Length: 422
Ligand code: UD1
Image (cartoon, rainbow, N blue to C red; front, side):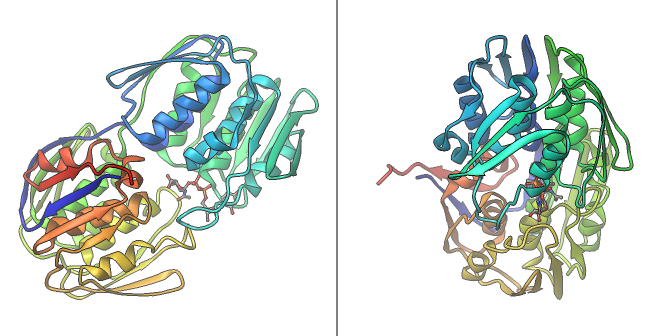
């Protein structure tokens, strides 16, 4: 398994072209199952989660080609409606295939996605919504079997929490239904609008309102389409944290500044100067960060749970005490133990982390506990004295395309060490 080796202490300077969004690419790839034709998807990043989604598509009968960052999916001959356990386990967000297989085939059989590194990821909202829309669901023997019982006509689903995955599954299951489905308290993440834009480019009729309402007018058929995936706002935020921690001046290209409105104040409070135009963000930092008192992860447009770990790494060297409250996932502080190995002073009680900033971190051998936790350790390594070795890089590769090359291009002393599997 690969490791990332970082010699910390270098200021960062230069430009990074930010990759396409992981959290958009995966539901969009799942959505290609609905298309009785060819989907051309641009700006699709090279990630192991994308590889896993492509494997599932091939298993279902799609022909998938990949050239640079363009993935072409021919879904005319989808022939299967079940996903075996081995493929489901490859990727946490495989559950979003439930809606698209149901929408295309009228039935789906998937294994239950169990707990994961960041805590249980229940799917009760996905399943209760689908039941309400008229799907019969059986959950026995570790499998979820879903079947359409009648033609879907009208339906209103009011989610008790704006779950991203549940919103996507309902959109996918209903895009080809007979009537109108309205989701209230739907997730408002930009990736939801991107999924709708992809489906609409294939002939679907989905309107995403700004206040958490999604209206799906079912159509009979989705056909050939072409779409460009939005930029990855979380990868972008991770690189901003890297420059905020290590100091320097970096320009991120291929971003959408409006995605960052809730997080820019955090960087400004930490002492960074942030300048933006529509598709670029520049961050300048000449000092040790200042503490940020109160960061609370919330559904979009609030502070994203995915940015919590890298921001924690940045403020671990701040002057003063920072507080982070994780409201989305109950077990998303696994990086704390690893940051402590590097000298960070962090106390966690329940959902609250109190970070007493230290003057400097020091290099250590640490292990990525999960995707964003792993990226936090890379951020910490950039600022630590000495050499940091981050193991279990496979977690990071799920969501960051060549993180070491991006950071090297802005001056970091970082490299990947490929180790033979033992
Ligand atoms: C979450 C994030 C999303 C991020 C993604 C990848 C939020 C609101 N969602 O989406 O921005 O891109 O992780 O890291 O920040 N829940 C239930 N029952 C369900 C579904 C969810 O109780 O059926 C709970 C979860 O336990 C969790 C919360 O709702 O506490 C967030 O879930 P959801 O938005 O569905 O998670 P993801 O789709 O993974």
